[in-house]
Amino acid sequence: MYKEIINLDITGMTCDQCATGIEKLLSKNEGIKETNVSYTNATCECAYDPSKTSKEEIINTINGTKNYRVKGEIPENGSGDSKQFDLIIIGGGSAAFSAAIKAESLGLTTLMINGGLDLGGTCVNVGCVPSKNLIRAGETAYHATHSNFAGIKPKGVDIDFAQIIKDKKKLVATLQDKKYMNVVSDFENLTMLKGWAKFKDSKTIEVDGKEYNALKFLIATGATTNIPNIEGLDKIDYLTNVSLFDLEEKPESITIMGAGYIGLEIAMAYNRLGVKVRIIEFTDRVLRTQMPDISEALETQMRKEGIEMLPNFRAVKFEQKESEIIIYCKRPDGSFTEIGENGKVVIATGTTPNTHTLGLQNVGLELTETGHILVNEKMETNLVNIYAVGDVANTPAYVYTAAFEGKIAVENAFAGADNKADYSSLPWVVFTDPQIAGAGLDEAQAEAEGIPFEVSKLELKDVPRAIAANDTRGFIKLIRNTETDKLVGARVVAPEGGELIQQLSMAIKYGITVKELAESFYPYLTLGEGIKLAAITFGKDVSELSCCAS
Image 1 (cartoon, helix red, strand yellow):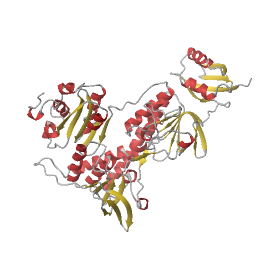
Image 2: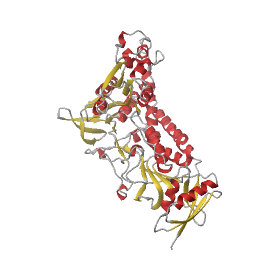
Image 3: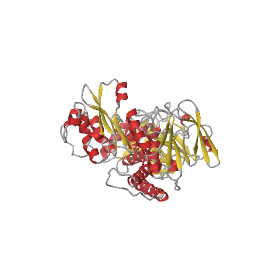
Image 4: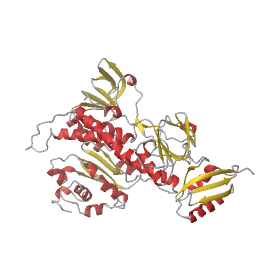
């Protein structure tokens, strides 16, 4: 009888009984003829009939236990095989690093392959960190020229645009080192490789002509700006957030194509830093995924600050004429017009998942209609050994959800866990001014799900904190289930409104009733007190209550 022998390096054993337990577990496989597991040497020698089982099946059996992991096959010369890994992570953003951290804690040999953006991915390089830094810089400039108090006369501000961008770049580099590279610098089982990975089959990828194998794969390649197919766009020097945020010379003006959250955050930040801003949006309003009252509140402030907004304008052609870009647009009435831009055109028309270079057609991985990798709540794809997380998957596109998904995917793949992503109370924030924040369902979503609901909407003009600050822009809106009185959704439009949404998210998650929100204590003259007042508004007119009344 033909036999093959493999030697495995096993982590997680704490005594001789662990070794005996692994031997008993392997003996249940009729293809295995002999095993010798040593706790002292942390090894397993296994003889098996390849016609009845395989090396991969043996390794998966051990990795399927709660405590034990195979680090990789030990060649006869004793030097490890760098091309065989427990886990291969494709991508280098927050999801990838979260997965690598969890993999290291489980003793898994891991290969992280990253192409495109620098390590750290969208968030630290071209997303959350730079955008919020520039938003805060813009707010500082705005408040130096605008006052809510008649007795305070602001005298203006000098803006060194190039210095702001240089400081932003320094911040990005610092956080990239501190929050990413330094975190994994002492990992013993992690190998990092720069390049573009392509699947040859479900167990093999190729990078720069070299092949790498793994028991499990995690795709965390993120997403990039969706560039629309419009005539002439490829002939002009347009920008995206990737290139815009590194532009040290302040443009005279910018025209932003798209009024989603990325376009709106860019618009407010750059407008306040002294750039003339125009937004072209092909639908009827900004932030069209939200209810109209949210769009209206935000549009009112943006127009007040001098941002030109063109809703229901559809760009059909771009043309470069000397130093000017001509944007041909179809107007709401069906006629056509030409819009000149002497500065820059910025594309902010959503994102598209980074899957086109992965060779997914070679493995039959299932995608959604939008091109995202289809995963279930455990981050599993239709292939048992391939997981997908973050912006490349059909899950909410936030850095904190991506990191969470990276962690649970590794736990589910290697630790026998059954972790699921529940986003029913997920909090989110759009960092405009006022900020837009939400958790749970809005009115349209509650109606679509057939939930009996009632809405309470409290204008900030009825919140003492906002009154005292002379800044009453926005509102707090709560949606409750009328049968249970439980909060099912919330939307906040307010300066620093994002600071309120976590409490409302927790209320939704743990089934807090509106009555309990209304009867809780809130410090007087905080914006958070508005939650109490919004809860009271379900049954009373708060404008008729005295301060601190319930």
